[in-house]
Image 1 (cartoon, rainbow, N blue to C red):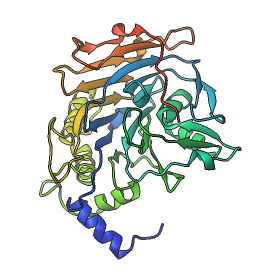
Image 2: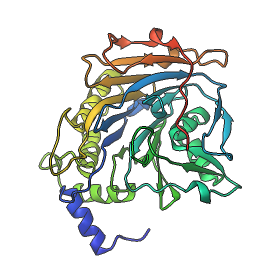
Image 3: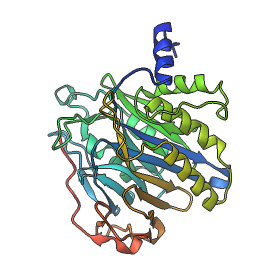
Image 4: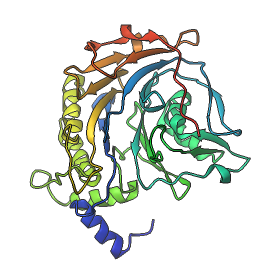
Length: 352
């Protein structure tokens, strides 16, 4: 791998200290790798406006289509999952019955292939289904890396319905073994970063440059100084430090509390605004996935209660019906909510 030029290093240094004014949406994802398979993945969803979320139970055997033109990929889901939808248009977060967890985060630098240049030898997949496809078909990160490395699939993005924003995102996957992979479309080509150590992801810059920034901060003890702004580079450093600093334990209760503390530390208070940075985004909701116990938690910042679902209590058989648990708006939900899912016709994923 080529070393960055001196100019790029200077840019990274400035970004690390929050001096580059690059407007971005904000999210953070971090993975805890405790002993005896105690693996937890946490993420925050940060957005300028409300981004309604709901939980969907998708059983095995669902027939899907890629919603990206005449050459769209078609498949039958191998695994059941609980997906967190955004606007009931896309899967932006989720966990399947094998403990594979996925998170979509914003990445302004993303450049997806153009529909017109997608070759006829490749199938196409709308970005709204990118994460769901992985949850449907893969049990592990390794399987997902192999699936997306074959080169026979192109993910196509489009404008988010109701906005003028093109969906520029990157995808993180983690599994019950603690393995990790980051998937980014840069210059129209898919780049895959696959390593157990890739436990943290935020937004801009691209993942390789985030790692370089974090390398600088590793030389400074976290108890002495940590970057404290809401910028993606600073949140990356804080998440990377704190996920290693919290207790390394196989006690799920302790680990869960610690991981919630890390993702809340990297969150942006609701209502934060800045005249010089109009695109600073408030945290709207957070999730934490317990891979070992197959429990998936949801924390809406407007609600006083954390809710969760034990996937072991759900019916993912092909004969089961898709179900929905409404999380948007005021709810009276609290605690374990597997019994609160209601049979519902699945939403239509946004197409290209």
